[in-house]
Length: 328
Image (cartoon, rainbow, N blue to C red; front, side, top):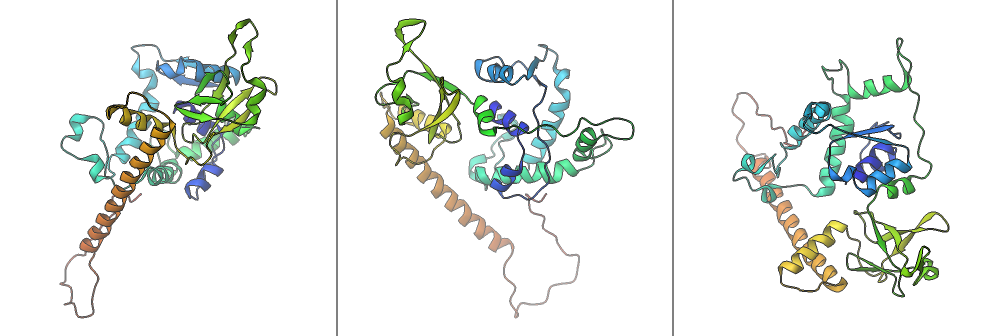
């Protein structure tokens, strides 16, 4: 998740805005020189630490027990979460605050709808709202830093990443695997492509008694293919499902399916069981979404009944104005 966030921050936003169906100005991109972070393990592990090193990005950790070093970003999070917690289905900040509120039952948005809502909020509302602390809007302050002001020169437009897909993969989690006749197995799923054939049963150059392991990068959002780092060509090669009739899925769905199967008493989990469980979970989700939409339509009809010509004239008095909860 941290890797996806870094890649999203660095890359231009045009494709993202088009994908979620939002028309907005979001001219923020460019590789940062330094990442300030707390002491979370993802910034001390091999994935992000190695990627930052390869891309000349310094990682500076917050001193333990010094929370004020992260005050500015914590303030930002508080602003965003305060707005998000007003949506139906919020989980609130903690169990005590949530109380008896049934978040899942009250939710009305899918993940894709929530992503679009939050994109609108960040790009069109938050970025263009006046902030007293900086005495302007965040977008205006960002542009000042790029083009400069009468008193301070700007940094200039940052360079764009030449190979965005490679940059994203460098920040994705990876697995090390040997390559067999069937290909490789990751999260119980088989992957194969002819590009792997030259490396079947390859041996470690430093110890010929040991099999050689290769790096396979994973995009958790889409497990239809993993990405093999070819040590000869020095590039990533997509390796799809061995059974290409399998549907697209995320790594989180696979992990949830495995957890469900083990809870049901399965001692061994394989690819067939995984995809059966995923399909069952999706069926339940679709039925829940259908019921939610049906309930929402019924509620809208109840709250806003149609007006008929024979209806009695409205009584005089102040008009009631209904503001949707998702109004921005």
